[in-house]
Image (cartoon, rainbow, N blue to C red; front, side, top):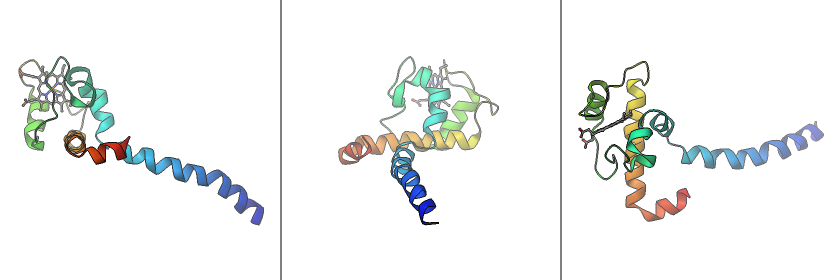
Length: 111
Ligand code: HEC
């Protein structure tokens, strides 16, 4: 029993330190953003062939309408590719990027 506990502690303890840190940095919307939006809107929504999405507050319903209907050069994206909840997560991720940019202390904490 004691030996199992010791082995368990040695194996689990470093994982317990490593996991929350990386989980905190990864916003729920980061992965769907990278998979679907990043090719056009650039890394961390800073803009590329499409305009940046950071720098101003985005309304989730407005973004959802644009994603479903398309906007100018932006093609519509179907629910098969991205659920409504994933679009809301992406808006949350962009808000989070804005907050991080507005608070340099938070930026250094996240690095
Ligand atoms: C194929 C390239 C492409 C992809 C993929 C793409 N966009 Fe766009 N998006 C554009 C372009 C180009 C515009 C600018 C359209 C215009 O102004 O005519 C745009 C505009 C927008 C706007 C409006 C910005 C404003 O100033 O009001 C939003 C919001 C937006 N995109 C969100 C997203 C989100 C969220 C995703 C991922 C789910 C995404 N886009 C994926 C190309 C893309």
